[in-house]
Image (cartoon, rainbow, N blue to C red; front, side, top):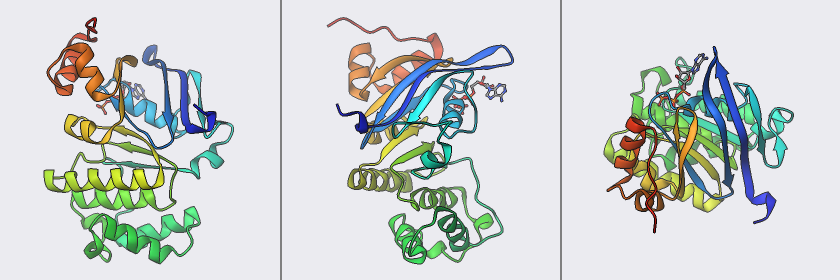
Length: 251
Ligand SMILES: Nc1ncnc2c1ncn2[C@@H]1O[C@H](COP(=O)(O)OP(=O)(O)OP(=O)(O)O)[C@@H](O)[C@H]1O
């Protein structure tokens, strides 16, 4: 595979907080056009890893390369080509939805921002929320506004932290399909966390399971289920969360 197919590469990322290792030699590669799921129980280290990949937390050791560049030495150049959305981060609450998106569009230097904002609101079926005050939105509405924000700069690399966490099943289904469509059309690489295994099976090409900061299983969702001889990805998740590992069965 050509090196420029690798959008993001974490090598031996380790983070120690107060003497406790919360990320332990975590390595992975994310390729252009791939959706990689990062799974693990509460406290497994996913948010710590996401924060490092956004340049917000420094690793105790290890390195991150994005688009072939060292993240910490080329933070601005890297972050211009990325974006991020989380169910748990809020946009400024006093602005209307379009004002918020306009501010981000200006920060990102988006050309023809009004048209871009309208097309993204339409994509996530929230055009009717354009003039609503952001702080008055429901959790699911504000999640979709956040996703609009995350696509404003046409990122090549997208970090999504539980993007469907607050969505009802109908909207979650639509959002998954929309994300998959946009991702396939534009060849975006996505790192995706979720506690919803349906989400993961539908959206992710490949997954990594973290337990106490260590990678304990890796592969396509169906490969992992087959190798571990569990009944479903959800069963694999529960097994790892409770016993810390899954045995891979031979043959
Ligand atoms: N700044 C910090 N100082 C000390 N400990 C921290 C800090 N940030 C995270 N931790 C610890 O690191 C571990 C991993 O936390 P992290 O938030 O990365 O887990 P997570 O996999 O995202 O969990 P969840 O699914 O609950 O969001 C936890 O035990 C947490 O308490």
